[in-house]
Image 1 (cartoon, one colour):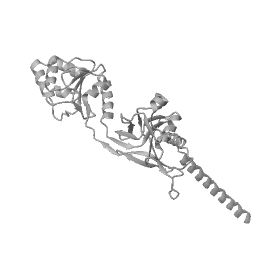
Image 2: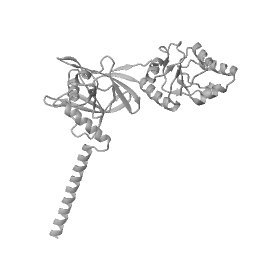
Image 3: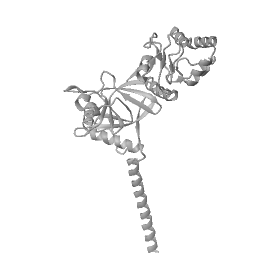
Length: 328
């Protein structure tokens, strides 16, 4: 398991992802990094208040800030611009395709700050940008395993090398499910409840099969059999069958595995010749989905057994009462 230390996302990637226009191309957007998932609308800063100003955030200028800047006196405006850009903010984005004045562009270029523009409305753009930064800057680890989308559930198959993870994934693909990543899965923590898995760019859509080599799933089976990323909902751990080991046969108590502080339900599957792993994985995924919808087969069985035991006990007490009455 390897931890990836993120150094931020470059402004160039944000420009490409969000389809932004660069208004001062003299500034190098490749070297400017964004390290915060939060954004800021600099209304107070444009009014001259810089206490507790978080300069690592992307600054977004909407209609309110824009009209305020237009009303400032020339000297006051230049003074505010200089103080604002001296804080070395990552970039400033104008929404609604608003066009900044030449003084702002000149001072921003002086401090090497990119000025960007978007056609989107302010609130809509902020929501999209925050979501993108949340993914791009999320804590990330790389683990050994296979991630497959099975009936909409993200199934992470883990186990020792050579135990059959890739073969199980290939059978699932043949049955209509989708591959996300083979061999190496990059897991990002989006929030306290969500883990997202994806493949490294180098190995995306490839599967390694011992004795055959590398196959390209996207080319061989079609684009409907691959997926770029997927939430991780369930972990399947493949283990060699050992007679002396005890395996869960009811499923009343959940087992968990932890990634980046988030717990994921985990099932340990013993491997023996003749066991159809693909069908077992499908059943595990559907059963997990059913549990999330409020139905637990193990609890239902337990309820029926308890009801039968209680009924048998009541029948026995009733028979004893009848026998006592007959003797009297």
